Length: 158
Image (tube, rainbow, N blue to C red; front, top):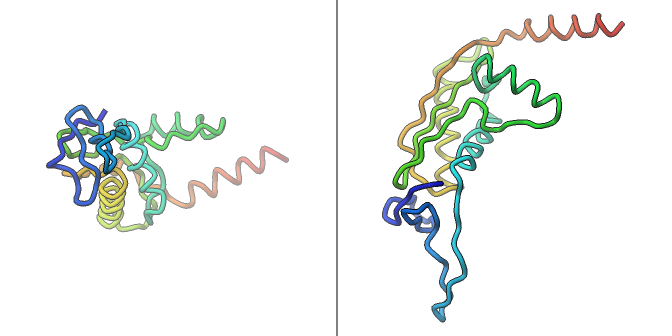
């Protein structure tokens, strides 16, 4: 669970308490309307979903994570947190993301676009301040690799 304080939330967001819940919403008559809890896994999922439209990004995760992800995809159980880890602290979060870029995309631009997408999504949707986004590019995907794999699969179907 998030571990946040009211003073360290992003401007315009609901204040978050140290136990990771939002301050109870209070009606004008002073009645409590409840509290909100945001799980750390939700923060990681939002970061992963934010990366869907980043140009030059082929896949998330390292080799083993991608292999497991391919199995999950085959059974229609996609893990949107694959390749993403978050460390949520007092009103802030640090994100580590591992990805594979598409050749010939400029790697620094892919990393910066991924960083920007994650920061904007977490700060606007969750209300946490993002202190850092560390991007590790583990591989470069060549379009010819996919074409060769697709042709081999088609040949096997004949």
